[in-house]
Amino acid sequence: MASEALAPGGRLLLVGSGHAHLFVMEGLGNGRFPAGVQATLLAPYQLHPYSGMVPGLLGGRYQPGEVVFDLEPLARWAGARFVQGSAASVDLRARVVELETGERFHYDLVSFAIGAGPPGSSIPGVGTAVPVKPIERMLNVVPALARAMERTGGRKVEIVVVGAGAAGVEIAFNLRARYTLLSSSRARITIVDGASQPLRDRSAAAAKLARRALTQHGIGLRLGSEVSEV
Ligand SMILES: Cc1cc2nc3c(=O)[nH]c(=O)nc-3n(C[C@H](O)[C@H](O)[C@H](O)COP(=O)(O)OP(=O)(O)OC[C@H]3O[C@@H](n4cnc5c(N)ncnc54)[C@H](O)[C@@H]3O)c2cc1C
Image (cartoon, rainbow, N blue to C red; front, top):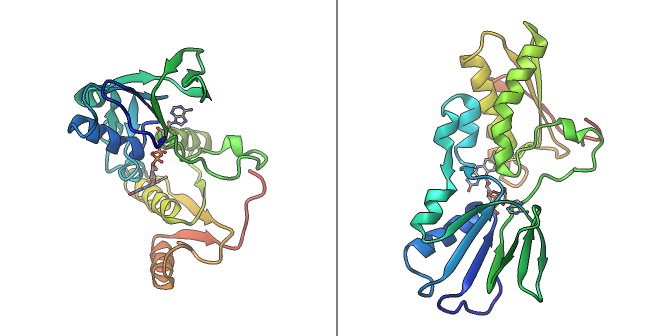
């Protein structure tokens, strides 16, 4: 966010509805901003999934409606306005954000918290994979799996999870839970990563435990392998 203070009655524009701005909404709702602030929350989707629960959706523990929250009533509670749309450009001099639709929003203070995207967008064929970021895309994983099951008929489904970090490992375990508990057909699940151990930003002990649990659950690990094409 820009450093200057927001004056009472000022226009605050929050671009992106992820974790970062939810704390701002909490602050607005609890009166921690100057009086009369006119806040707008701008995001491409009205239903925002909570990433901590989305792996449980893959595993069959939760239903889609249980892992998302509706930004419109949340914004209303915070005294803000929710606008569904994607920011396409910003004019810092004029203090205007323009949406993909051409709609323009004037602000006194703007904050961009539009999250991260998975690296590797230039890998050939990557468009056919199912990305997990922005987090809303993860809601597409279950339907994509259902389509894969249909395509393969009775055969084993081959699932490759790219990335052996905390999210990739958690996703692989939950996919295994889904196919063990909810389906008669089994799936072969393999995690691929260029690193030499899973959870590379964690301790060696954590990596060892992860390896052991993955093996116990029949999840393959292909380490030291960078994905060059999908
Ligand atoms: C499988 C998985 C499990 C995870 N589990 C946990 C966990 O248990 N605990 C934990 O702390 N973290 C977890 N994380 C990490 C967590 O999701 C991120 O750290 C967090 O989402 C980052 O918050 P953010 O606000 O920066 O971005 P995000 O939450 O990604 O939000 C960015 C938002 O900006 C929107 N946006 C993008 N472009 C535009 C645009 N042009 N205009 C308007 N809006 C836009 C997006 O649609 C999105 O809603 C997990 C991540 C994954 C993938």
